[in-house]
Image 1 (cartoon, one colour):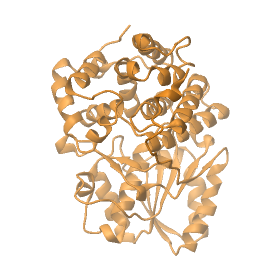
Image 2 (spheres, rainbow, N blue to C red):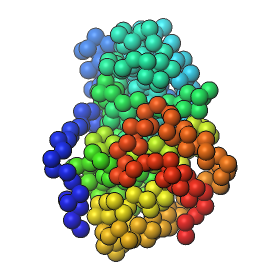
Image 3 (tube, rainbow, N blue to C red):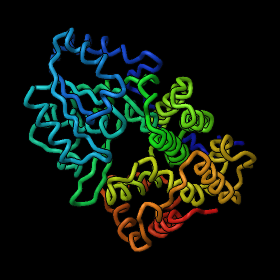
Image 4 (cartoon, one colour):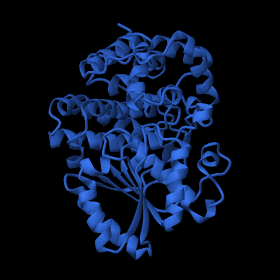
Length: 406
């Protein structure tokens, strides 16, 4: 496969990787070093963003609490983070952080707590004291500063622990915009497979598929580069090999390790190559129905996205999906073969839902298309898709995701 021919060598690209991430069984113990660093920076009060159970059931609190107590670091905890977090929740967290004078923020959990943590860190910075979360996510100011962010990751999907992205919903507008800024790279991240052993089967599936979606988009965007394609191939190989193993054997630390690693490099991947159709179109889905798991929404859309984008980048996608759909030759005419093959693989790992199963109807498509094009920031994603992202294509992807392709 000669995907190198798809790279524009005359386009100057940025290669990004800024977070110090601790990866491996036992990495959680690094919170002691992180707390030492906070004290050395003169920070002795922190905000913690999490939900009501994850910080306890994962064992994170058993290590973090003593580390903070030993060093005299006080904390306040916002434990009301919900899936698809909202600007109202962020404002509550920020209020708590301001009351204690928090100089840094810990996020404990998956994408929702860590994104809440990132958003709170922006609003806790003195330069941004006059703003709230709606201001942040309607882009009334540019996020250029944040207090230090520490991400303790408890899923293997989002990659948010190593990237410069965050999302939040504005409920009354049914908007789920994306925040991008160098200031929200976490200073430190922890990826410890041992804290994932209790991750439920569906979350295991959905987060693994989230990582696969990240690279599917990053490696086919208009700003991709060889580094991005390389990471995409490795991510797909690891997810294909270890996701079924983690679903069948949740306590398999090797499977958890490599899914965490795949998720991390996928986060770096889309930090460099950006995202396009699948994420731009999933955000309206979970903005309208907040109970929809992000990774599930992505899984539902992925086959149709592949069908429409494959003809523009067959050399790249055939290489990436070789572990999932063997025998692809890298020619435009096999787009549907790849799309159906990926859908069948999704079914094989237990993700069989389509939009109709989740309560969406054909009559919802107009609203979804409108949100995809009018939600702030999503136009940037659609603008780097490998084919023209017009309303006709977006509509077709939604419609063809209502039912199974095969």
